[in-house]
Length: 149
Image 1 (cartoon, helix red, strand yellow):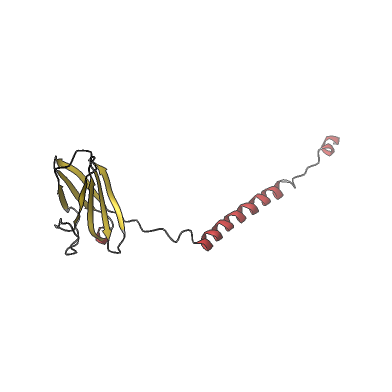
Image 2 (cartoon, one colour):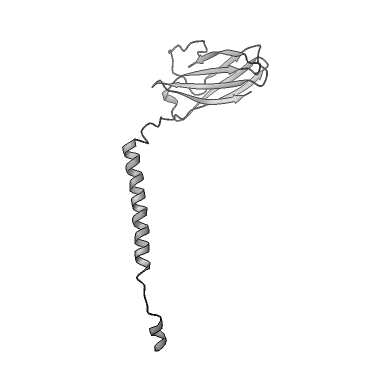
Protein backbone atom coordinates (compact mmCIF):
# COMPACT_ATOMS: atom_id res chain seq x y z
CA UNK A 1 0.00 0.00 0.00
CA UNK A 2 2.87 2.34 0.72
CA UNK A 3 4.34 1.82 -2.80
CA UNK A 4 1.27 3.37 -4.39
CA UNK A 5 1.82 6.59 -2.41
CA UNK A 6 5.43 7.01 -3.61
CA UNK A 7 4.41 7.46 -7.26
CA UNK A 8 1.23 9.52 -7.39
CA UNK A 9 -0.62 9.30 -10.66
CA UNK A 10 -0.35 12.58 -12.68
CA UNK A 11 -1.61 12.67 -16.28
CA UNK A 12 -2.03 16.45 -16.49
CA UNK A 13 1.12 17.18 -18.57
CA UNK A 14 0.10 15.28 -21.71
CA UNK A 15 -2.98 17.29 -22.67
CA UNK A 16 -1.47 20.80 -22.36
CA UNK A 17 1.55 19.88 -24.53
CA UNK A 18 -0.63 18.43 -27.29
CA UNK A 19 -2.95 21.42 -27.04
CA UNK A 20 -0.10 23.89 -27.50
CA UNK A 21 1.24 21.97 -30.52
CA UNK A 22 -2.19 21.96 -32.17
CA UNK A 23 -2.71 25.68 -31.52
CA UNK A 24 0.68 26.53 -33.09
CA UNK A 25 -0.06 24.34 -36.12
CA UNK A 26 -3.47 25.93 -36.65
CA UNK A 27 -1.97 29.42 -36.35
CA UNK A 28 0.73 28.67 -38.94
CA UNK A 29 -1.79 27.21 -41.40
CA UNK A 30 -4.14 30.17 -41.01
CA UNK A 31 -1.25 32.63 -41.48
CA UNK A 32 -0.21 30.86 -44.73
CA UNK A 33 -3.76 30.87 -46.12
CA UNK A 34 -4.30 34.53 -45.28
CA UNK A 35 -0.92 35.52 -46.76
CA UNK A 36 -1.69 33.65 -49.99
CA UNK A 37 -5.04 35.42 -50.25
CA UNK A 38 -3.74 38.90 -49.40
CA UNK A 39 -0.66 38.78 -51.64
CA UNK A 40 -2.47 37.04 -54.52
CA UNK A 41 0.07 34.24 -54.85
CA UNK A 42 -2.13 32.05 -57.04
CA UNK A 43 -3.61 34.71 -59.30
CA UNK A 44 -0.88 35.08 -61.93
CA UNK A 45 -0.60 31.46 -63.06
CA UNK A 46 -1.15 31.23 -66.82
CA UNK A 47 -3.21 28.54 -68.49
CA UNK A 48 -1.24 25.63 -69.92
CA UNK A 49 -2.79 24.10 -73.01
CA UNK A 50 -2.53 20.38 -73.76
CA UNK A 51 -1.45 19.93 -77.38
CA UNK A 52 1.54 18.26 -79.01
CA UNK A 53 3.59 17.76 -82.16
CA UNK A 54 6.10 15.29 -83.59
CA UNK A 55 9.35 16.29 -85.30
CA UNK A 56 11.35 13.97 -87.54
CA UNK A 57 14.09 14.45 -90.12
CA UNK A 58 13.07 12.55 -93.24
CA UNK A 59 16.12 13.35 -95.39
CA UNK A 60 19.28 15.45 -95.48
CA UNK A 61 17.28 18.45 -96.57
CA UNK A 62 13.79 17.96 -95.05
CA UNK A 63 12.30 18.04 -91.55
CA UNK A 64 8.72 16.89 -91.07
CA UNK A 65 6.50 18.43 -88.37
CA UNK A 66 3.15 16.82 -87.58
CA UNK A 67 0.64 18.50 -85.27
CA UNK A 68 -0.96 15.83 -83.05
CA UNK A 69 -3.64 17.92 -81.39
CA UNK A 70 -4.74 17.15 -77.85
CA UNK A 71 -7.36 18.14 -75.32
CA UNK A 72 -7.11 21.82 -76.21
CA UNK A 73 -6.75 21.39 -80.00
CA UNK A 74 -9.74 23.64 -80.69
CA UNK A 75 -7.93 26.63 -79.14
CA UNK A 76 -4.92 26.52 -81.52
CA UNK A 77 -4.82 29.32 -84.09
CA UNK A 78 -1.59 28.40 -85.90
CA UNK A 79 1.74 26.64 -85.43
CA UNK A 80 5.19 28.21 -85.81
CA UNK A 81 8.28 26.15 -86.66
CA UNK A 82 11.71 27.65 -85.94
CA UNK A 83 14.96 25.84 -86.77
CA UNK A 84 18.53 26.67 -85.81
CA UNK A 85 21.19 24.50 -87.44
CA UNK A 86 24.31 23.40 -85.59
CA UNK A 87 26.27 25.75 -87.89
CA UNK A 88 24.37 28.71 -86.40
CA UNK A 89 22.18 29.24 -89.46
CA UNK A 90 18.64 30.26 -88.52
CA UNK A 91 16.03 29.00 -90.99
CA UNK A 92 13.21 31.58 -91.46
CA UNK A 93 10.20 30.66 -89.29
CA UNK A 94 7.46 28.70 -91.01
CA UNK A 95 3.81 29.05 -90.01
CA UNK A 96 1.11 26.56 -90.74
CA UNK A 97 -2.55 25.93 -90.10
CA UNK A 98 -4.62 23.47 -92.02
CA UNK A 99 -2.80 22.63 -95.23
CA UNK A 100 -1.02 26.01 -95.26
CA UNK A 101 2.74 26.11 -94.88
CA UNK A 102 3.87 29.66 -95.55
CA UNK A 103 6.04 32.40 -94.15
CA UNK A 104 3.13 34.23 -92.49
CA UNK A 105 0.08 32.91 -90.65
CA UNK A 106 -2.85 33.17 -93.05
CA UNK A 107 -5.77 32.77 -90.63
CA UNK A 108 -7.81 31.01 -93.31
CA UNK A 109 -8.46 27.63 -91.70
CA UNK A 110 -8.31 25.99 -88.31
CA UNK A 111 -5.42 23.63 -87.88
CA UNK A 112 -6.54 20.02 -87.58
CA UNK A 113 -4.80 17.24 -85.68
CA UNK A 114 -2.69 15.28 -88.13
CA UNK A 115 -1.72 18.38 -90.14
CA UNK A 116 1.82 18.12 -91.44
CA UNK A 117 4.32 20.55 -92.88
CA UNK A 118 7.77 19.92 -94.29
CA UNK A 119 10.60 22.41 -93.90
CA UNK A 120 13.27 22.11 -96.59
CA UNK A 121 16.81 23.47 -96.51
CA UNK A 122 20.26 22.52 -97.74
CA UNK A 123 21.72 23.56 -94.37
CA UNK A 124 20.42 20.70 -92.17
CA UNK A 125 23.15 18.80 -90.35
CA UNK A 126 21.28 16.18 -88.25
CA UNK A 127 21.99 18.22 -85.12
CA UNK A 128 19.41 20.92 -85.78
CA UNK A 129 17.42 22.57 -82.98
CA UNK A 130 13.73 22.56 -83.89
CA UNK A 131 11.15 24.46 -81.82
CA UNK A 132 7.43 24.10 -82.53
CA UNK A 133 5.29 26.81 -80.94
CA UNK A 134 1.50 26.97 -80.90
CA UNK A 135 -0.28 30.33 -80.92
CA UNK A 136 -3.72 30.11 -79.35
CA UNK A 137 -6.91 32.04 -80.00
CA UNK A 138 -6.37 34.14 -76.85
CA UNK A 139 -2.99 35.32 -78.26
CA UNK A 140 -0.83 33.30 -75.88
CA UNK A 141 2.01 31.13 -77.15
CA UNK A 142 3.41 27.86 -75.85
CA UNK A 143 6.22 25.59 -76.99
CA UNK A 144 4.59 22.26 -77.78
CA UNK A 145 7.70 20.40 -79.00
CA UNK A 146 11.42 21.08 -78.90
CA UNK A 147 13.96 18.63 -80.20
CA UNK A 148 17.36 18.23 -81.79
CA UNK A 149 17.14 16.22 -85.03
